[in-house]
Image 1 (spheres, rainbow, N blue to C red):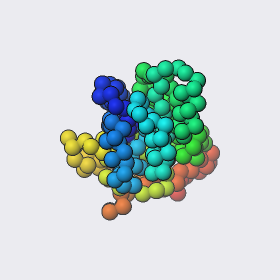
Image 2: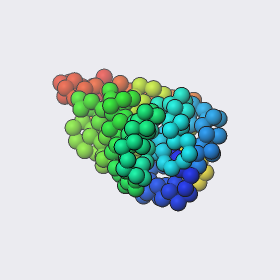
Image 3: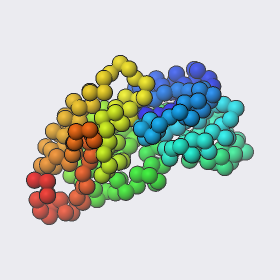
Length: 237
């Protein structure tokens, strides 16, 4: 889920529509509403966030530090004017990237993926992994072959790979895929998506790499490297 912070409603609505076309959940806040939400947000809410887009608001040079105290997700600043002074101020304030607005959401996805691979998700993106995701809308590579997935199954796989070895509850996956404020779906829809995803992964790998446990949720098990997978049968068989 992407969080857009901008005091202009037209901007937050515009990016929400763009993310929606890409099958990515998002939410827009004014800076005041965002500060109120951030203060009361719990860990599960914050773990569902892919990145923050920081737009036009009076406190844009103080918000990054407030965000960083609570969450490690990338912060991308949207700069309306290409002024070196503003760019330097934003980087000094703690943002991860500064882009010139308006910007297509696909570029935002790519930039977010680069930041995540460089920081919190680097180990999960090594090309030697049997499952490789890109976090920018591209289909994953599974056992060296591209596997085409519907958008929501792709988002689930990306989230599982980014948190490989950790248990993710159904609620956590739902929040990451559908957003924190979507009441039009029941979170039980995640069970259907995961079931379809597991079947496809089993067809590619010959085993199911996703472990499920009641009350704990789902976990992507430790993945063998390509070389070990090719050298002999997997321990999951």
